[in-house]
Image (cartoon, rainbow, N blue to C red):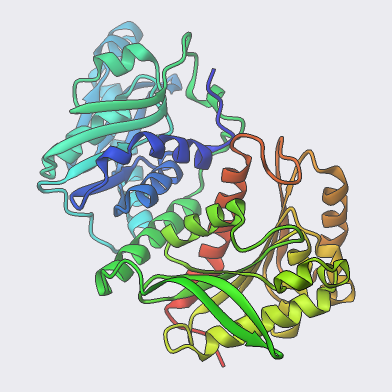
Length: 442
């Protein structure tokens, strides 16, 4: 049986099935609230705009969790006639529930869009996403809304659904379910974390998507720069790989650990995810090849931090990145260096993320960190997890610890690196992209 860790992971898995849809006429529509985090992942993978499509389940008067139908924007109503007949729901009872739910629907859609108009669907491919299908009532209502708004093609995409519902779903041109387990009992059984999605999460996802589309509209050039760079730090020539969108509103500098380099496939995977979310990346080697062979240099956290600060100043000297928000992503010893550097230039750094890192190596600098910090550790990495908990207690800035279940130190287990990368991306998007429009305060 397919089981997802949470909606974000389910969205990434579903997105892999939808790559064939990528194109300029695609619009992704999430069903609020639980479908929106999944739709956000799909929109990023398809480079498509994201919106909600306002629908709401109509529960039985005496058993609200069981759908007797659904409503949607544009006055759409879908009735589950078999359920209504079996439950002997009268027309007046149905109308009372529908009236109350429509008021709630209108209020929710207004909160989610925050004054934005619905995305235009005329002639578009509408990809309607939810966290799963049970009866399919709300997804059917969403299809009717999309048809009324002029969608040329409708694709319903979900991480999990009963095979018989997929086969009988006639309102869409195509239904794609990443998993169709038998027997099927309930959507929530296929998620380890199926907590309700909050209004705030929906608004954050829609705001980030709108910002991404706006930046692409301002300048559709896919990349300003993607290549190898060098710069000098105290007379030492250091190498890096710089990948920038245009315009560049945020850049994340990667500080890898011992035994790794800017070519690390794990860091490059994370960097690609950040770039797709609208952020530039600088993967750099903090040591020269000769220095890497000397263990004294590898654990010289102060030296590594100084060079990370030098990379920050180098970015600030470039015309295209002078006002970009900057974040640090550190792994292993690189995490200690990132925190020391953030403590030394607090006004220059907007967020720090550590993956399987050693923040304890920052030592007395931990109390001086004023930058929002996320520590990501594998649940099966007990020694490093203990060190991160101790470091977290000493960081006075807004910070938290995220434990990835089943992951060991290198996040080599299936799905664990993707989960860690998603956590990093969301944290950086929250703290960097929201500030990128205004630049850095000086």
